[in-house]
Every structure is written in C-alpha cells, then in structure tokens.
Image (cartoon, rainbow, N blue to C red; front, side, top):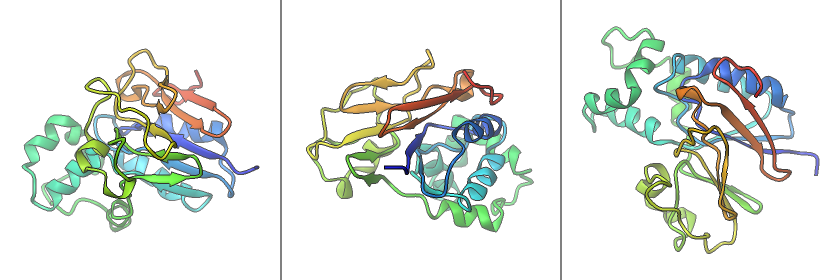
Amino acid sequence: MRERLIAIGDVHGCAKALRGLLSAIAPKPQDTLVFLGDLIDRGPDSSGVIELVLKLQKLTRVVVVKGNHEEMMEAVLNRQLEHSVWLKYGGLSTLDSYGFNGDRDFLPPSHAAFFKTLVDYFEQDDFFFAHASYDPDLPLAVQPWADLRWISLREVVPSPHFSGKLAVVGHTANPEGNCVDFGHLLCIDTGCYGGGYLTAVDVRRRVAWQVDPEGNPR
C-alpha cells in the first residue's frame, strides 16, 4: 500500500512549525493527511496556518477534525458564546494574526468557508481520528461533542472502542514532547505552542516526524 495515512497533532498557530513539518513529510497526491484540530489560537500565526492548509488541499487529500478551539471561535462568531471565554484560551493571538479591527467578520471568505468543512471525526480502515477523546461504547456517529472535543486524557483514558479500531487523538499535550501510546489509543499532541514539538504520524507504518516551533527537525 503506497498511500500514507498521516495524522498531524495540534498546530495552535505555529505556522513555521507546520511549514517545516510538511517539508519533512513531503505529501504525495495519494496520501491522506488528517489534522486533529486546534489549528488556531495561542501560537503566533493562526491565519498563516490556515493558508498553509488551503494550499495543501491542492496537493493531497486533507481532512480537518474540529477541535475545541475552532468550536469556541465558531460559537463567538455565531453569538453563542461570550468572546471573553475564547480570549481566555488564546483567541487573542488568532485575532491579532488576522489584523482584527473590531469587525466580527474578520475571516477572509476562503477561511470562513474552510472552517465550515471541519468534521467531528474521521475514520478510515482500522483507525479513527478525533480531537480529544471518545465514548468507547457509542458508535462514532453519535459521540457526544464534549467527549470528542473537550475531555482530557488526564481526566480519564477511555477503554478500547467497541469497533476495535485504533483511536488517534490530540488535545492532551505531553510536555515531554513524546507521543503517548496506550495500545488502543495514540495521542500525538506534543505541545508545540508551549515550546515542545509538532508531530505527525503515518499511522499504518508508525513512522513519525517532529519539528520544533521554528520548524527544525527534532
């Protein structure tokens, strides 16, 4: 099987890191790259991250799972959440990257359209991808949004999903910069925005790439 199925952990506005990671991966048209959510917030260049992903979509198959940070931004833009909540969790850096001037419609049309394409989860072959966690006893199509986007593995590590598929998630950053493998669940958030690494894993071959916030290989 020549095509690769590659998961990418929480980018959090680290455009330099993502640029370096994609250079190391060298995506091919037949590959599938799955971003596990939280492309935005906290890091310095959320707008630049989205631009990179839009360009990547022209080169290979790209799937982007919605993270809790995308959910917060969406809720603020739809007037369903007070903006102070989003800003508390790093939203200000996203606004700065877009040159926010007080206009709620600060997203360029292409970026606004992009955020509407995000999915709750993705599954392929013997794997499924979510941002944070999952309920092991429920089908993926009816997973609670709180489990998919908010539950930390520090709170609870779910048992194997009844489907038998390997879960690949982000959200719970490992400050030591390493992926955490529970056998049935692989967490690849390695804390790039906090000075750790941005990680990608070819889940079939278990080949990993890591770069620091400046995009330098580990």
